[in-house]
Length: 470
Image (tube, rainbow, N blue to C red):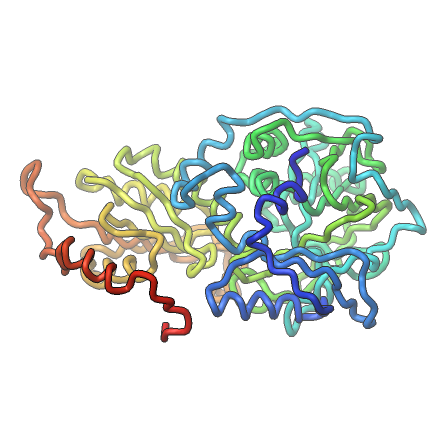
């Protein structure tokens, strides 16, 4: 069976397991901050999560699972994380239809708590940062369906644990889940919902693929996993909302019509505190889980939260830009730019081609800036990207501003009023060579000979550099 546990067994040597209790109130997230500062990216498995009341949860907490791009790529069967854009762009082509299994064969049905027995406070949900409104489910995949077609959709939305049976739910107005909710509310009906937590990371990444509306993610998630995803009907909604049979936890309920309440603030992916926002709520009817469930949390604003969705963005942007640019060879959405910037890499683009591709890419709503680079620049190294911008760009010639484009969500610099912003495209590619086979018009890069490099490697061979100044 391919699930979260099978993956954890595969990466056992890349998991940090603290021996002592660690509090769900900021302390687990603080571990992620300290490790990020040291450029350490193991998964973190807390066997003794200490709840807010001081007791120890019998449900372990897993976090930092996606902090490493290398591990995230390997979960998808990609040997080199730099190939993620093409792999994510092709996910739909490798889709595998899901299969339905009996409830008796579904580990997520081992414990079923309905009605009064369902209690969200039994989950070791984290309060991650100073200023957060409370404890949040941060890696819950929210599943709704389009009442017109019956086609389901899912996406990760932040979920505030407000009580035993109440969740605040932040859905972006343009999200497919919000489109589904609006259709139910227009008929005066509550919107059915199920939220699953914890699975093999390939399933979680496939579930975040950028698809059209209405379009189900289950077959794409199966393609990412490399096998048919096992589904089971939800308790509350039956086969109208299916859930992964091998998930760790499922929360079911309804979003009651026109019930809007204040939600947040919450420390967001941008690295800033997100504001309090009026949002719908989930009234919980049922919680099912494995008997030894693992609670999966994603550290908001950290690489753990950004990497899987950024890889999904890379695939979507690659598809957009590749339509107008055959010379496009790669796309990177760097964690340093959160989800607001993308690097596009080209091999010998024709005059104007890189700019055409940037215009296509900037239409991706989350982006506020795109950059074009030649293939001699490692777009996965911010130092090289900044070097190219510093030495190959003239602002009067290579900076393009576009006004009146769609607003990137949760951008802390966006204007308080208005629904559009100015976006930018920066062309750091070099002019083409005067003739085929000739070098491009740029001074040679500084380099030492291959012999000198080999000699230097020999001097350093076997030397432990741990602790040297960084």
